[in-house]
Length: 254
Ligand SMILES: NC(=O)c1ccc[n+]([C@@H]2O[C@H](COP(=O)([O-])OP(=O)(O)OC[C@H]3O[C@@H](n4cnc5c(N)ncnc54)[C@H](OP(=O)(O)O)[C@@H]3O)[C@@H](O)[C@H]2O)c1
Image 1 (cartoon, helix red, strand yellow):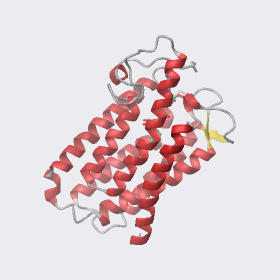
Image 2 (tube, protein in one colour; image 1 turned 90 degrees about the horizontal axis):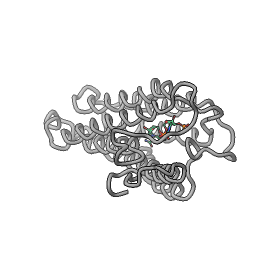
Image 3 (cartoon, helix red, strand yellow; image 1 turned 45 degrees about the vertical axis):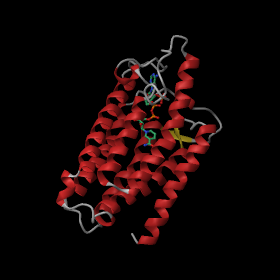
């Protein structure tokens, strides 16, 4: 990838994160609890998740292996963490969902999400094995940024997976409605899966000291903070007995 394209795509991700945040604060993305008519055709939900996430996995794979420093330890570890996440999201997560009848993944969301995921995988892969390699000597493995970043990634990963698993088990086979999630970090916030996802990518950005990863954090927060706020409002309106001390996404704050 040449420098001009890299710079343009990177600026595009930062810019689209800012635009997305402004839009989503006023118009909630039409899926899940906010699903509604008027957003065009959709595809099967499992297929939707699969084709949405696949470009991130492929983009990272392809661009990482185009770089010149693919076998250095630190980039290889970061590559592996990114790919473990996206392998799970693409090939496993869609099959764990208990999908309500009639639910579909809107094509308009898919097109936008696939474009972002492809660009995000490509930029992060290229940074790790080519653009950022001046950082990644073996000394980087004991740099506090790398160690703290990896620990934060791991904490966010387990929070997200644990919280997604609680949600995934709320519906018993054959059930289609919504319940109040309990336990784990749901004691503090309505959307700990989103909190985990944001912590995970913040850890990844710190561990790689990488601008494309920072752009990814901004995009993720721009997407998930408005979504958490609208889901939190939705829970409070739907359930009279919804725990009043629970926040939306940041314990005790937001
Ligand atoms: N990096 C990013 O920008 C980004 C963007 C979006 C999502 N994600 C990640 O992708 C994962 C899924 O996101 P999502 O927005 O689809 O999550 P979600 O709205 O919390 O839903 C996840 C699954 O749980 C079900 N569910 C949610 N609340 C429920 C309840 N109260 N009772 C019963 N079932 C419930 C949903 O069913 P319904 O579909 O029927 O609501 C869906 O199958 C999360 O880990 C999130 O962090 C990341």
